Each structure stands twice: as C-alpha cells, then as structure tokens.
Length: 102
Image (cartoon, rainbow, N blue to C red; front, side, top):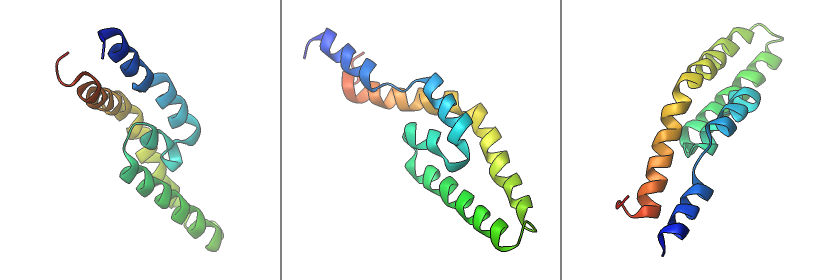
C-alpha cells in the first residue's frame, strides 16, 4: 500500500473527540461514547446499569431514584477520560494500519 492510501485509511478510521463528546453529552448515560471509542464491555455495563436503575426507579415509584447518582457520577468522570480513551483507540488503529512503522 502506498503511504497516501495508508494515511487515508487511518484518517477514515480514527476516532474524533468531537463525536465522542457529542455522544457522551446526549447518550453518555447508556455508554454510547464507550461503544464508539472501542470499549464495548464497559459500554454494555453502563447500558445495563442505566437499564437496571431505570427499572428499579419505576418499580419503586421513585424511592430508588438515588441510584441515578451512580450513573451520573460515571457519566461525569467519563468526560475527563474521553481524551485518553480516544488517544488509545487511535494509537491502536495507527498500529494496525501503519504496521508499527510510522
């Protein structure tokens, strides 16, 4: 592959901080940003935690609504972790695309 094609492939696959933060802001409580950044296991855990919290809040008529604090705290902490997650994901993409010779 030529250098231009390799660079183009990396540009196509690399993850954007802007997209990650938009996903975090609007769908972060269900882990959408984690799926986007290549962390599906923690994304599934966050999705399941949100679903269980919603179910428990509905079943308990709001008595267990304090569990949203846990989801919200994880959501806020992720705002600080997104740059590192994106850099790590882009580094793995670069390793694969460039074959560790960049």
